[in-house]
Image (cartoon, rainbow, N blue to C red; front, side, top):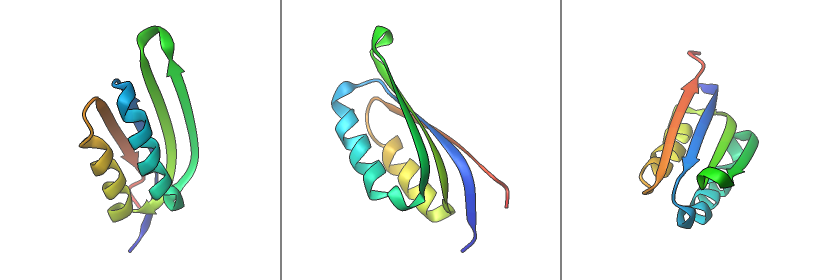
Length: 81
């Protein structure tokens, strides 16, 4: 299966989900090229941006599991090829 490069933005609004988000990112670490996390304390949210390189199945698996978590919003953009 063909690999794609992209970015995933994750906004965590419920602090109790941070550990689960990090667990999932660790499980899918083979598709993560880079990661930047910013705890925005004044707004009580955490924002994580990751660069990914993987198959659509792998990327969809990660974003799907993250999106099912309460208080977590996920958006992604991938290359077309």
